[in-house]
Image 1 (spheres, one colour):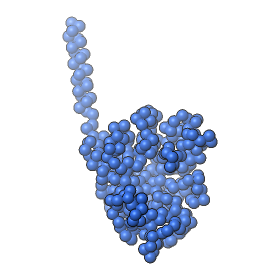
Image 2 (cartoon, rainbow, N blue to C red; image 1 turned 90 degrees about the horizontal axis):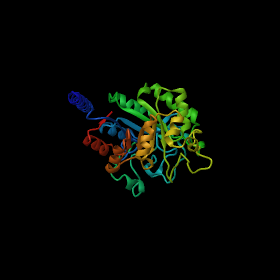
Image 3 (cartoon, rainbow, N blue to C red; image 1 turned 90 degrees about the vertical axis):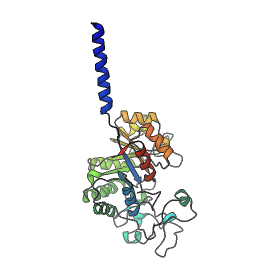
Image 4 (spheres, one colour; image 1 turned 30 degrees about the vertical axis):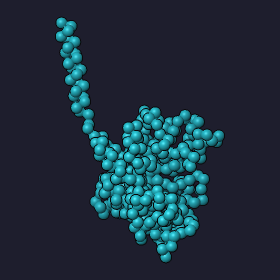
Amino acid sequence: MWRRRLAKVLQACVLGWVIGWTAWPTAWAFDLQGHRGARGLLPENSLVSFERAIELGVSTLELDIAITKDGVLVIHHDQEINPVYTRDASGRWLETSPGPIHHLTWDQVQTYDIGRIRPGSSYARQFAQQEARDGTRIPRLSDLFDLVKRLGNDRIRFAIETKVSPVSAEKTLPPEPFAQAVVAEIRRAGMEKRSQILSFDWRTLQVVQKIAPEIPTVYLTAQQSWTDNIGVQSPSGSSWTAGFQHKDHGSVPRMIQAAGGKIWSAFFADLSPAKIQEAHELGLKVLVWTVNDATTMARMLDWGVDGLITDRPDVAGALLKSRGIAVK
C-alpha cells in the first residue's frame, strides 16, 4: 500500500515539475538602451543617431539634457559645448569650449556642427566606426519627441539624464528648476508613461519623485578613480547623493532603496553577482552602463542584469537574439 502511495506522490511531483518547466517562458524581456542613440555608429545625441538606434531595435533611447540661457532643453552630454566633435559656422574646429550651454542661447547653440569627430583625437580612435554626418545640429528634447511621433513609434521609451553637478553648480540651473523644466517638457509631449529621469546628482531625482511620481527615476552610480558619486572613502561622504550616505546604509542598493529609488544604473566594472542579487532582493532593477563589447555584455547577462546601455546596439541586439532574449 505505502509503495503505491509513494509512487503516486512521486508521479504527481514529476508531473508538476514537467508542467512548471514547460510553462516557463522560452524568452524573457530585457531593456536595451541606445547610449546617446547609437554613438558607436553615428554622431552622439543627434536625431540621426536616435533614429538608427530605433532601427536597430532598442527599447529605450538614452540621452542627456542641458538647458540654454533662454530656457530651451537641448540634448547634449556635457555641460559645455565639447570641442572634440564641434565645429563653428565656418566649419573650423573649436580650439576651446565657448562655455556652458546654460550661458548660451538656443540660437547660439544652433550655429555649431556636431556631425563628425575631430580627426586624430582619442575620441576618434575610440569610435573609429562612427559615420560622419556634416551639418548635424544639437537637437532639442522636443525635436526628439516629434521625430518619434513622425515615425509612428508608440513603443520606444526615453531615459533622460539631467546634467547637474554639485561641484559645478554655476554651469547649470539648480536641481529643482532643472528637474521641473524636464518634467514640464515630458508632460507637454504626453510622454510621461514612456520616460524615466536619471542622474548622478540624486537631488534632481528627489525633486522628480515629489513633483512627478508617475515618472520613474534611475539612480546612476560610478565608483571609479575618474568619477565617483558614492564617496565610500570620503570622510564627509558624497555631495551627489542627496544626503543618503554609504556609511549610513552600508551598500549602494540600500542607499537607493532609502532614497525611494526602484532602478539602479551602475558602471559595469562596479558590479558583481552579489551586488546584483542584493539589489534584486531589495526590489530594485539593475541596469549597467556603458557596455560595448560582446564579451562583457555576455558576462552582464550571465550575472542577471535587467538591462544594459550601449553605444553599439547592433552588437547587443545580435547577442540578445542569439540567446533568445526578447527586448521589451
